[in-house]
Structures are given as C-alpha cells and as structure tokens.
Length: 160
Image 1 (cartoon, rainbow, N blue to C red):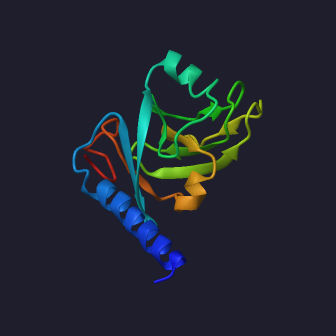
Image 2: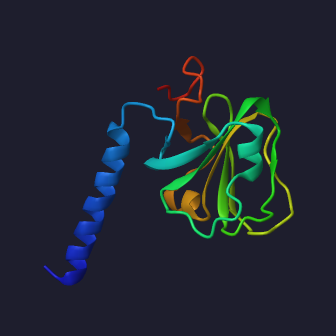
C-alpha cells in the first residue's frame, strides 16, 4: 500500500469517527450544536449568546477560532436580524435558523471589519456563526437542521 493510500484510509477513518461521534451524541448539551442534512452530520462546540450583551459582543476581537467551534445566537422570539463584522477579525459563515432549528439561509464568508449588514429573513430565532468556508465545505444549506436545547422540543425539526 502506497503512502497516499495510507493517508487516504487514515483520513477516511478520522472523518467516519467524527461523523459517528456526532451521530451517537444522544444528549443535548448547551455547549454543543449538532447539524444534519443530506450531506451528513457535524458537531460544533459553541458559546451561547442568549442575552443582549453577549449578542452585541459576539465574536469580535478574536484572532482565530478552532474549526469545530462557533457561537450560537439565541433570540427570545423569531424576528429579522442583521449582523455586521465591525471589530471581527476572522471571516465567518452565518447560518440563520427558524424556531424549529431549520436552516433558512446561509451567508458564506462574511468579510472581516465590514460595516455592511448581513440580514436574515423575518423568522430568525437562532444564528450559528462558524469559521468562514466551513458551511460550504460540509454542505450546510437551507433545510439542514440543528439539535440544541435552545430549540423548543415541542416544535423542533430534530428534538433533543
């Protein structure tokens, strides 16, 4: 077996392990968001921004962020929200979700320091921010679903 074949098998095994780990994570945790779709599943370790002060600060002033982490913005009710990248140093993907935890819109690679508003639809309850390019690389699109305790289990597309 050649070196490339070995690396390919190791990479495939690692991806399968990561996917299986996300799939068997049966309990919902405040610090984790599971995402699923036709593309598979992923898990992100998140900070939760569930009050005005945390949402206002967001991910500003951070020079880097590990690939499998992010921030989940939680609003008290569905609404239209806008995000800008002032004082944000890294490109971000913004994943806008409704009250069922279903992705409504994905904004790819928001530009650091931009003052342009990235607007959601009118029915946004949650926003998951992850490193720029990760949503596209994984295949996260409208219709994907998340699992997190902040999504009311009675109405969740993928309940805890």
